Length: 95
Length: 217
Image 1 (cartoon, helix red, strand yellow):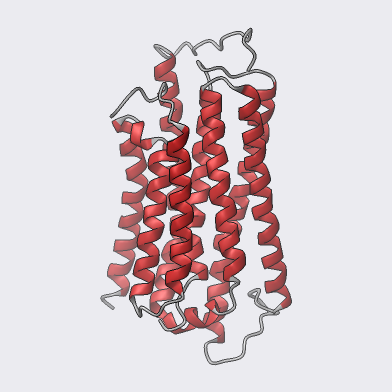
Image 2 (cartoon, rainbow over the protein chains, first blue to last red):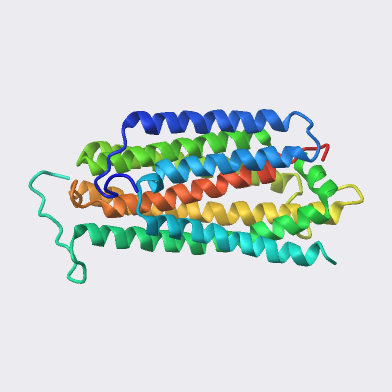
């Protein structure tokens, strides 16, 4: 936890840097999709998507400066999604 | 957000403004957690189908318009930037700036929906909408149809969220116009922003999953 959640004014530079990074990652994900990496194409695409998600969540959604409870709520949804994926695939992969 | 606006009182069940804002913020995050699972069902269906039929998904992917998909991703990322800047302007009590940025966010949102409508229209013309009119030559036709069922359901649910988001921002813009917010009270702007960014994140995953499946998979 850094700074007061509701008082924190993020400098403009941070928002523009994050937006630039998001556009670079968009170009990167399209670029990589044109190269044949076999099964790793989807891995790279998802790593880039997660990186973009983290940029949006941490900076645009202010989670970086938010309370521990917000961190908990934000990661809770992802955790339950992971459980949904894991239990479903544990069925399909062991048939 | 005029200077002479009456400060919005803290609701009686809260100790102070800080607590009230935090409760609202947590409420939206809790709602977003349910939204992750709402979309999660479709993402799970996608995971299972793609795992079962990788070739059919790669074939179906050749029918997708990567250029329009990439442009739409850029449009949504830009809308997230204007949304974040709109919240910042509200934090600083800059009503005019905040209003303009929220309107810009809505315009980008509408542009996204417009491009999506063009894509949908083309898919209908090409006979790629699942159902009796679905036309696809090849042995994996039924599996390709399943891909397009997922495509229309996932992007359709996402587009519905965009429409709701634009509706919410219309209300927020009207509230800004009436000077309802101040540096002391801007929680509705911030919380609406959280929703908008969430819808952006869903698209961040839909784009590579639906448009960028490698043909050599």
